[in-house]
Image (cartoon, rainbow, N blue to C red):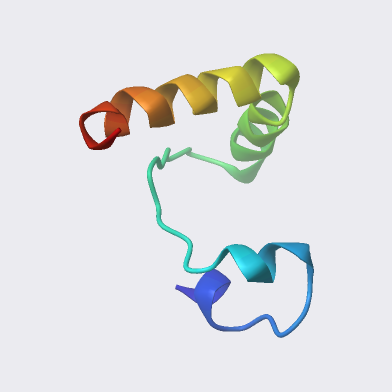
Length: 60
């Protein structure tokens, strides 16, 4: 996965290794970018956080 290997600087480099916990597929780039914008909103971040907590609740 390129997120774990390519970059040599930046804020997120210290949080490696990244693990994929959720994926979505879209028919076109416009729909994917619309969803990305939605996920980066406050409600979207709340959705992501709740999904992560639910998925990993057995580990906490």
